[in-house]
Every structure is written in C-alpha cells, then in structure tokens.
Length: 349
Image (cartoon, rainbow, N blue to C red; front, side, top):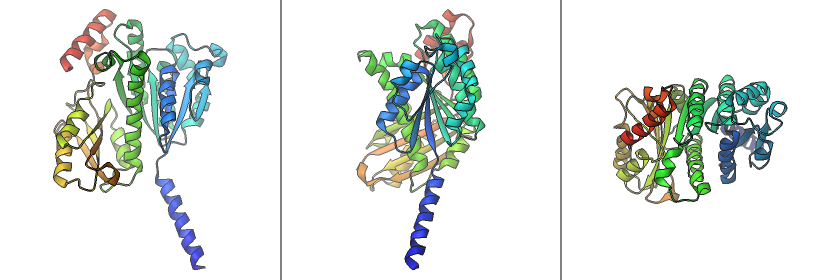
C-alpha cells in the first residue's frame, strides 16, 4: 500500500511538471521560413515542435518538419504565389481553421519567414494572429531582403507592418549584414548563418523558461515581457570574461538595434560552480546600463557544472528601435528608401 502511494505521488509530480512546462513550436511560413524550420528540426531542440506552411508543394515536400501544411492548392495549384503577398494572405485566411488547429495547443509560437516574397509575407501575420487568438505568445523572427532587391524591400516593409499588428513582438534580421560578416562564404552557408541565429534564439528562450534555475525565470516572466509588444531582440554571448560576454552580446553584427527607450528585458546567465556573485553582477550590470531607468527588468541565473569557467548570457530586450522604425523608412519613393537604409546602417555601424 505504501509503495503504491509513493508511486502515485511520483506520477502526480511528473504530471505536474509536464503541465508546467510551456509548449513551444516554431512555424516556418513560405520558402525562407520553411528553410529555418528545416534546420531547427535537424538540430532537434528538446521541447520544441516544428511546423512548415507553404503554397509550394515541391519545396514543402523537401522540408524536414514535424508537421507540414500545404495551403492554397486550389488557388495556386501548389506552385506558390508568384511573389504576391495578397494571394498568400488570402489563402492563409481560407485555411485559418487548419492553421488554428496546428497552433492552438501551444503557449509560445515562434513565427519565422523571409519577408519580401508572397507566401511568407502574406502568411506570417495570419499565423501570428491565429496563435494570439488561442492565447499563445507569438514572437516573429523575420529576415528582410538585400537593398538591391528594391521591390521586395517595399513588400517586406509592408508585411512587417502587418506582422507587428499580429505578433506580440517582432525580431528583424537584416540580410545586408551578411555582406559584412560573411562576404566570402558560399551563398548557402551564408544564409545558414541567419538560420543558426534563429536556432539560437529559440534554443535560448526554451532553455530559459523551461529549465529550473537558481534564480528562476519562467513562462509568466516571458509572457509579461512579450505582452509589452513592439520590436524586440535577443542577445547572446559566451566567454570566461564578464566584459567580453557583454561586448559579444550587444555587438551582434546581424542586428541594427538602438536600446534607447527599451521597455523591458529578461536576462539569464548560466555559469559553472565557481561563478561568483561579483562576476554575475558585472554581466547583469553591463546589459542593464544600456537600458532606460524605467525598463522592466527580470534576472535569472543557473549553475551548470558542465560548462567549466564559461559564462553564457541570453537576454530578451523589448521596445527597442530598429532602422525600420524611422520615418526615413516610410518614404514612398523606393530610391529614397534605399538611400535612407544605407545612411542609417552607416550611422549605426
């Protein structure tokens, strides 16, 4: 009898732990988003489901994802939208019941897409809307085209405007940055750099909110931060030196970010058993010094004996400014738009 009571208690505890763990998925929309999901699925992040949604049946068939959904087959015959985001949006709304069925069970839904095309640009805001409708926190991770892709750039900005209305928070990655950090890499490997950054974002958030910490950050902390809305960014750094960790995190070459006016941050450290309070404080202070006095900040820390002397930093900062927030990026003339982007990139470094 006693053994049965103990066994029942253990099973109840396991059920309770499973219930507490937030359910997380990444939804790749269109070709670019599906490529990111393909890579995430190959990495096999624990506790993260992958979903690919596309209008191109051939690309979808080659995508490695836990779940795949072909939409718009009657409108596009499975050949894609031809770069028209209006078609992508329409077929997404036509398939809203199927999209909702895919995302309704999750607590956090990452929506990833390459903006500027037809399917990703049109579908991503609809997926974010469906996730919010069912109570999930929706975080968009999207890339914008190279400056030379003029027409696609205009389409991308229009899509991002809609996405920001649908998603709780939006993280924008700029393909132009690849020209600075990986100009000589083969083109496929260069684009994999972006996919890897998306992997790190999802991995960092998942580990932060799902794993038990000494100073704990949970789903409620993440939720309250994301509900503040606006543009956000994820910072990541790793080093044995506290100052180097901070420097690596805030100088991410793939992001144009202005921390002035940031509304909040969730900052989490992972260190070895010898991590001192002073060193942890130095890292926390290095990030919070970049934020305004009114920023809502939550701190977390975990000890991992396997990482030795290293310190890993993962921070989510909300309410940041990106180049796309400036008036210069809303000029009706596309040439002026491109010039403004280049000028802003030079100013921000």
